[in-house]
Length: 67
Image (tube, rainbow, N blue to C red):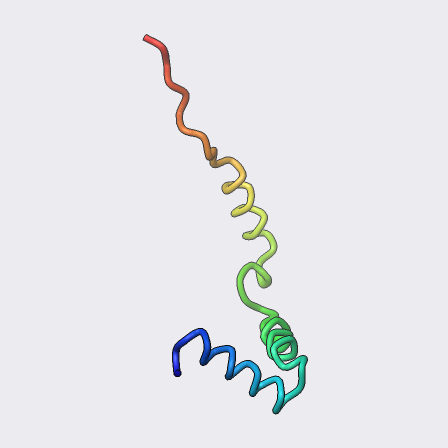
């Protein structure tokens, strides 16, 4: 049953039985607390500049000029 939907449900049930109902919440929280220096964390000025550039990019196409 490895790799199937039923197998995944069975594994999840086993993990919750062995490690508690909050098993997935705890491992998810661990991941969120791990990193503190990645991405733009180290350089706020760079983050500001990148955000400004992204904000100027239009999601609409170029205006069509009627001939």
